[in-house]
Image (tube, rainbow, N blue to C red):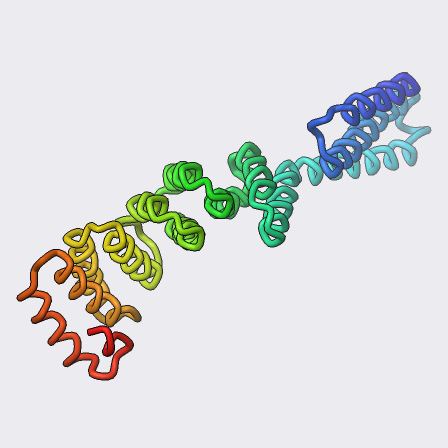
Length: 274
């Protein structure tokens, strides 16, 4: 019986090795698991044979077999804990591609993580990386869809806003104003770190102003001032509000806002423009 089990093991390994979708790390894990499974099976057979010969004469051999069987069981349990091994591998691969300027390759690697075990801890950073990878590749629609899936899978997770921020910056660097607005609208009202939310509101106001939507830009700047009165970008929000009022044709209101801005920031970064 044992030789045929060995032949089956070799055949199983060859079948797994031939699968094109299996990358080298997974193949190695499969081989190790099958060897451990074979060890467990042969130990079980040997124990059964020892029992048939009588426990008195074979007591030491039986004890050794029990120890061997326990080691095989433990090995299998440890290997089975590694079912998310692929997820960790693909996450590292995606990050490596991203750092080297390969957003499409990174997107494929992050997608493989998300196709893997649902309990894998690598899923959240893979969602984050996928949104950013699509944005860096200039595929804003895909970045927006990936962010929506991230938010749906992990509602309330603050990393969703960080993912969208990275995507907005990538779209901004590419000069994609409509793409920026789409992502900023997705992020509107999301939970996250106060500073990230403040920056996103400022970027939103700027994008609306650049899109010839001054009334909406003014509202967004005013909302930013109200929500982040002690924030880092209060001066920017104040100036944006005044400029938006002017472009919206609210001259009297704009004059009052500019006066208030200069009084509060007499040597501010927008002094020359104001």
